[in-house]
Length: 418
Image (cartoon, rainbow, N blue to C red):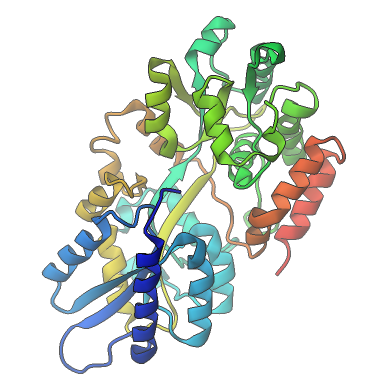
């Protein structure tokens, strides 16, 4: 996460909460435009992209005006839940895909299905990304997709050339390469397993590519399927059989993973395009990216992570709120935010077909991956898995103290909790 001005952001958000308590998240005035209160987080609170978008919207809309409140990400989810329970929530808000499992079943979010069906921009959204706004086993849309990432495999071309290897396309090729790329005496390793904070996303990208699913079409948790057990065994074997991860990898968060790859200590890293510019600067022409290697018989897949927009059930003018969030998902606003320092990948086919997404081969790869990618399902248990349980269980398994089956059984129990 980039540095931000937390004092300013908190002061702004506290002032907005006070105002919201008075207005109840909507504008009852009989005259004048409806004001939509909108909450968001920003990786860089000094960037003006979102403020500029709000000014553009307000200048071109007479019936609806938007007022932004920025809240630091580490406070955001709890603040939104608290405000919703007290009736002081915003009318519309930014949301991560897997938060829906906490918000929607509690009646916090409005069902947007009818508005989406009537929206003339819906066919421009990459079709597979609509699932990021749904609950498992349901067709109702609770979140309008906006910005996302897909995970891929970064690799060091020089390290691979020295070993006489091609980049892996299958998970067995990955493991064979990992063995050949590791020379502990020389301080050279293949891959960080990232058993610390945030490691569940890297692991889940591998699992999806290996043929695993978290839930089936009915919404039942199937993370302990034979395909999942096999994919997890392959992942664990990087440490338990090959000893191909550097010291500290079992408990590492992202910073040392990125540092090891940039320095050439590791030859491969799973992450998303957010690291692309930094890795290009560090490795230059030695940097390569390829899709996550697949399991035997599995089709291409990876993890996608979506930041979208929701309307709160307590909002007094849901049509006005949808007018704002659907405007954000039109071509010019989408291009503006996607090419800013706040931006990720655009959910619109029209923007994905324009520069730089259509001309940068690495970004093209990331966009193409979205068509077969899957997201963490919106289950309440995902929050507990991400916060603690994945780290606990993968570290035990990487230390050889439980099997792949035992690890996944415990994660399934976590995911099935209400």
